[in-house]
Each structure stands twice: as C-alpha cells, then as structure tokens.
Amino acid sequence: MPVGRALQGGADRYFRLGALAPVAGPFHLSAFESAAANDRIAKSGLYLAYFATAWNKAYGLYGSPSEAFRAPYDRIVEGLFDGDHTTEEIAGALPPTSKDLFTEDFLERVRTPSGVLKYRLHALDTTCDWKSNVPVSLFHARGDQDVDYSHSAYCAQQLRDNGADYRLTDVGDYDHGNSVRQALPRIVRFFDETAGAH
Image (cartoon, rainbow, N blue to C red; front, side, top):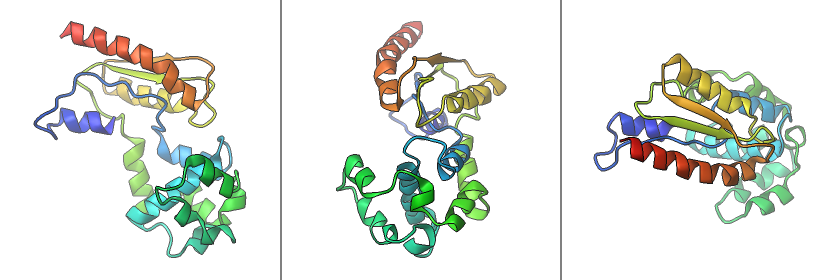
C-alpha cells in the first residue's frame, strides 16, 4: 500500500500504478505490535524481536539490548538478525513468547507507545488511508494466526472512508504462509481483469 501510494503520487517516472493486491498485511501496526507484546499472536516473540531490532537501528528504541531483552537473550538477539540466520534458526534460539524474551518495561512501551515510537507507528497505521485511483483487491485468510484478518478489515475501512474502489477476499482457513499461496492465483486473475479493463 505505501508503494502504491508513492507511485500514484509520481514517485517514479518509469512505473505507474495499475492495480494493488496486498496479502495479509499488518495494516494496523500499533495493534499488531501490542498484540505481540501481550502474546496474543502466533510467534509473538519472534515478530516483536524482529520489530525491536530493526526499528532500533532506524529510530533508537533502546540504548542497550539489556533495556529491551531479558538475559541471556540480550547478548544474542541482535546478532541473530544479521541477515545470515534463517527464520528457523532465529526462532530456535529465542523463547516463543514475548514475556520470556523482553523486559516488562519494554513491553509496556510497545503496549502504550509515546514519542517517536507512537509517531512512527501511526504512519504505518495509515498506509491504507488514501484514495487509490486504481482497483485494490485485499486478500487475507481467516485462519491466519500471525496477522489477524482484522488487519485487512481495518485497511478496507480506511479505503471505504476515502471512497476507493476495493474488495476484500477471505481466501479460507489457512495460516499466514498459505494465505499467499491461496491468494496468488486470484491476484493473477485480478491483474488480468484490471489490465483488460484499461
């Protein structure tokens, strides 16, 4: 959605926006990270660790790893997200729950963000808050335990409020990874239909 918005705004002189078909995005990122902090999503520790280390590099969420991560993980987490470790390796080295991986102070900061964190999260809570000039087809599986279906409904509401042409398709009772597999043939058909209409 942010790439589509940028293209519609003329950000690139070589590419123009034809249609958008996002799949199972965390469109309400502040709610997603809060749910991860409360261990209400699958793989919450892994998702929140990725978020914390990536955003710390960009925005400085903590001064030292021990401010965010419990021992002994504070000594290894940042090294795991070096681009050389697989998701399986990272998940195997960390506890699955946020409460066992993070300090309570850091979890509370994620639950009730303020300052730079709140400002940056808000920008990613509004990636659908604009009127696309092209058709948008959102795809999500109701069985997704990683990114809840409500995120695509949240995006759809923002699109609706802006008068955008959109549709939301539930691809079935599948997990997060299989959401994409189920959506891909539908996306191809959607792009073919859209191309034929222009």
